[in-house]
Structure formats: structure tokens, C-alpha cells
Image 1 (cartoon, rainbow, N blue to C red):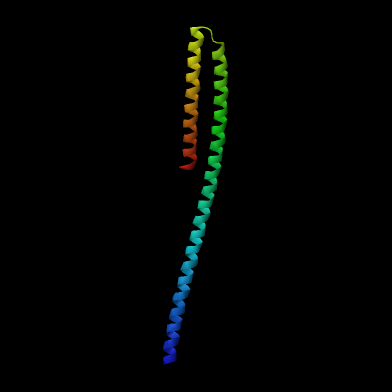
Image 2: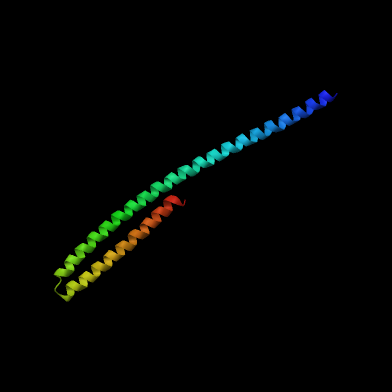
Length: 114
């Protein structure tokens, strides 16, 4: 009789251990899946950030070129009309700079915060 009771408790204990193992495996699978999703998102974020940096660099280069041209034009300015035109060009450069920054921020947000 003692053997039957011992066998029952052993079988019961073995069943619990098997169920816990099954649950642990399912949880590990879910965690691995979540980890892969996060890795993919991290990679996408890194690519987006690199693209944003490249676009920002290109924009800075363009603005520097525009500023250099404006400085050259200012040196050649002789009349008030020329100076007024130069002020307008400065404002255009500043407007383009602000617009570029806003567009980059919007593109980054659209891409990464769906």
C-alpha cells in the first residue's frame, strides 16, 4: 500500500514538473519573439537615425553654400536696393533652414512613431 501511495505522489509530482516545464518553454518562446521584434525595431531606428543625420548634413552643406554666396553678393553690394535684396536673401536662407529642420523632424516622427 505504501508503494502505491509513493507511486501516486511521484506521478503527481512528475506531472506538475512536466507542466511547469511546458509553461517555461512557452514563456521562453514568447520572450525570444519579443526580443527579436525589439532588435528589428532597434535596427530600423538606427537606419532612420543614420538617414536623418545624412539629410541634416546635406542640408547644412547647402545652407553653408548659400551663406557663402550671400557673403560674396554682400561684398559686391553698392546700393540700398542691393542691400535690401541681400536682407531678403538672408531671410530666405533662414526660412529654408527652419523648414528643413521641421521636415526632418516630421519625417522621423512619421517613420518611427506610427
